[in-house]
Image (cartoon, rainbow, N blue to C red; front, side):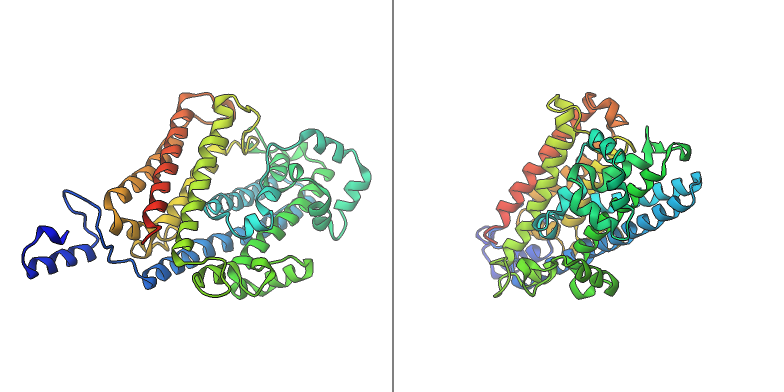
Length: 389
């Protein structure tokens, strides 16, 4: 911008304007972004890890553990109140999982945790065959039933949606009179495996900052919790971007991975979670059909993008230490488009006709698809914008 000024004083003013993150009226793009320093990138990475990843996985681990305890209580005391309590814990755990999906890169992908705990649709025929197998029910009812579930049941019988099938019908907590002891044996075992995998996520990212009991559980199960079996937790790996031992060659590459994760989930929500049923490609591909919380799932997925981009979860956010501020300093118009695209995707998803399982052909679903595609597109521009900065 300095070519527009003839005096040193005005040149200095232009630099100060760049530092303030304010946009120019004629052009939002600066030639030399003032925040493009290693220190700024490290600050953004630390904010992302400490105020998005860490609290999300901590809450996920906590509520999946609560779910196991609530299901064990329900198994021993079959009351409607206990069904309702288990459903509450399930939905809370589900919320934190969905709000982690902007950063499925890392442990969730490397250890196959995502498909293991969140595949759908549930294979109802396989479920019925399982219920008809006394030997498998007995194995699931053993002291190591969680391990049996994790090792012997396929992804289509594991994770959130298997438990959802037991606990919910038609969007409501299931009537306790309809539950059997075998249902509860299955639900307790599968929830135990779900908890184990969520502990693995927590320990993999938080390392020594994860609760000792959770780290001990991982050692007992012999689950890997480090990058490539080495010394780094996934947070340490990202914090050490650009240094020896990290899988991130540069700090910029680490920032781009955050954007990549956001692009991936925005694309998945639009083209798969909403798109497959809406377009007729696969009408059975409806997430969370028994609890009828599909639209909440989609909304929480986009919220995960907002948290990653804006500098933290709600209540922990610091926009001055965010990708939002960083992109804004490079190209404020692009940043405005990203913020607007995030908010628009949230609005369009929230405006979808509910429940999705019965209304996936409604035009509102198509509008949400389009909003997610637009979000993916502008995020891709952001990744390109920071590649040389």
